[in-house]
Image 1 (cartoon, rainbow over the protein chains, first blue to last red):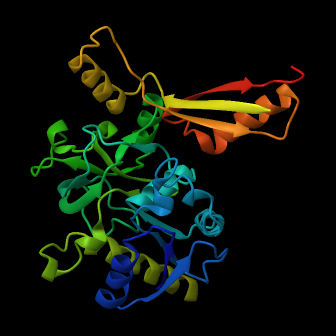
Image 2 (image 1 turned 90 degrees about the vertical axis):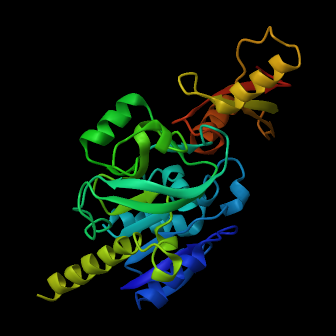
Image 3 (image 1 turned 90 degrees about the horizontal axis):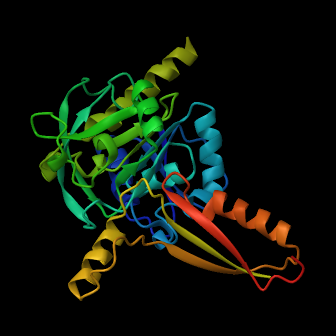
Length: 237
Length: 84
């Protein structure tokens, strides 16, 4: 699979994603500078974590207007895979490619810790490596990950099965004390209605190697590879 | 024409910053404060004289960039209006 990692001024998890895709999963990976208006034929585009544009105005607000995002939008509209991690999730909500907004954490603290997540559906390219209801562990590291939306929109997201990951207790129960940033309904990750764009605050790329003590994030990337391979096989048939 | 745009969290949404500031004000003796909403303010200098057009432009700027209307409200004030 040909993968692109978009680099904004202030991105700082771009090399981590590159490393996992290239050296752990042996895929072709390119860095895509945010001023470039093309994705150079990439099948998967990743918007990495960091502080794009210094988080000026709001996290992701200025990055959402960069030339690369026009290409990302076209890619998404054609059904192409887009993954936004942490600041990349903020960029996708600011670009309106994903619903909701990410605000300052409830307790005003930067939260840097492992969290438990429940995978709410396993029929997406991003989650086919998991089972629905499975509880996984991933690190978070953010000050603005508090997911918000209008109540009616939250109901609509739930009904449309766009909530993909939720902060839960280690036993898999949604509890406020395990929802460290105060997100509405414990939402940690959402997808678009078509299911080809995913944004999440936790960092799967930091949980993808034995040597780091956690490989729960690896299945997310492996699921994307399997989906891409299946799609290519379908196209050849 | 000059204008000021103020952006602040929607009323229905908890504003943890405003709450923390209110707590601090109470600690230093300003117990009269019931609520603080913490927002941000932008001063814009526009090359536009018509108040109606300036208002329309500023509203568009707020909707597209200055505010995130999922979680924020905005107010527009026109300053130094010439031919309102």
